[in-house]
Image 1 (cartoon, protein in one colour):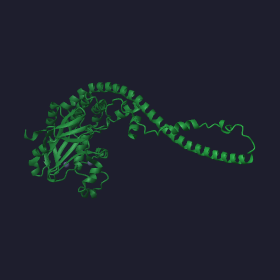
Image 2: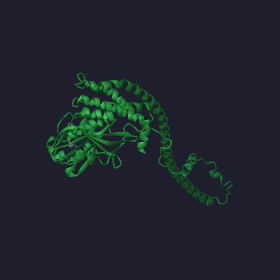
Image 3: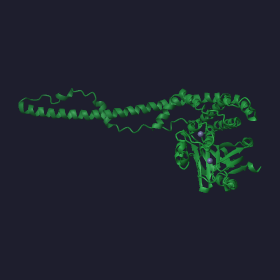
Image 4: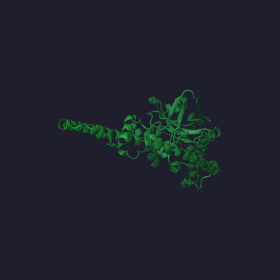
Length: 413
Ligand SMILES: [Zn+2]
Ligand SMILES: [Zn+2]
């Protein structure tokens, strides 16, 4: 109920709501550590995602991505150290996409503004109903208290009157009472009418928001779509990683798929050419992976890697890798398969993780603020501590046996 009220309050002001939505678009800071080519590829993906959301009817999320695309491509990326020297097909494509993206964003903004305004008056009415019910409840409570007090006063008065009557009866039993009703007929109890109305009313139930009347709104930009992962994905990926695993070398892959109505479906793992070690894996030849995704219309939905001898967790390097995925797409996941420990983890960064890692400029294995270096190596054995703070199990993911999985291994091509 409280969240419903807050939600209604947040949506009862259309201008504020639009402002907040647009502000959420500017949440990505460029970092020189990330190759500029990767930003341009992400921008193309972001544009594709925006279009998918709009086609899906989720205008809010579509608009956020479009505005983010325009803002990042026209403004933020200029502060990258390689901006002026970088030339690529992707940079040209992004430049081509900007004008239509801006027009589209403006149109959607106008459309959403109308929807927000219509919803705002609806939510203002809901709030008014809620406030009135609250007031009635308070009045009813006050009424009950007053009724009780009045009853006590009346009883007291009656007792007093009876006593006086008895005394009068005794003293003046020879006097005839002409009008026995006279004593009370003109007495005025101004609060009685409201008291009796309140006392017959049933206790007001908790005010409820009428969901039937609620306009069909698109999910907010913060809402997460569910993600369904092919049930055979991990087994297939581990099969491809087998040789590396036996040699204690990590293997990494990119999780790809599509957006189907209300959910993402992870249907592909692309294993890029790579250099792996016991505690790391660096992808190479990202261009060919990107071309393939582009041709097949596959969206990047996260990544997967093995920990050949360790447990399933996100190391500090993994946290940085995943931060780049999750800032581009809030639903992106990191799967860690630890065959030696028979563990699989499906992780996302917590809000604290996103802000901590986003602000961290260190590279390689390193501790994060709040963890002193001296304890770092000890803490490595207590991954749960780090897990609770910076990353956590993804709650929006389900593994589904009905989704087939394709593994594309560039290492063998
Ligand atoms: Zn790892
Ligand atoms: Zn860091």
